[in-house]
Length: 160
Image 1 (tube, rainbow, N blue to C red):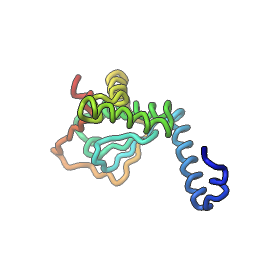
Image 2: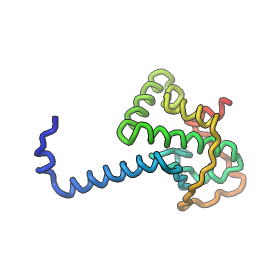
Image 3: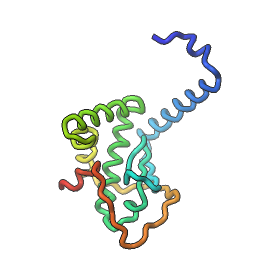
Image 4: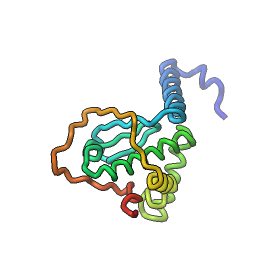
């Protein structure tokens, strides 16, 4: 059990950082329940990922000619935003990490045996998604004939 003096002895700047973090996570969690995900087009080594109700998509993927794949990826990432809404900012990272560790031990990677990834793939297969909120940040349109990279965590799309 933490002593109550932890709060009274804590430096005010540390308290402020903790309070802002809690408020931000609370706002993101609340927004995830009632709002559409915000798709941000910005350079990303991962191709696409979700943090709370925000989906980040690399311009190479967003502007690719394979729009069917893009919409599948967006639906997959939207599923992660819904998982965030259901499990919250504290349980979601713990559950995802547990799934990734299980997958690493059973499959040799962090995706193929991770129930959160499998659930997101199943959702994406059954629920097409076209975003309504898109923000383009420093996202130049790639040159023509750009090769679309496939990322291992979007394995479910390629198994169809």
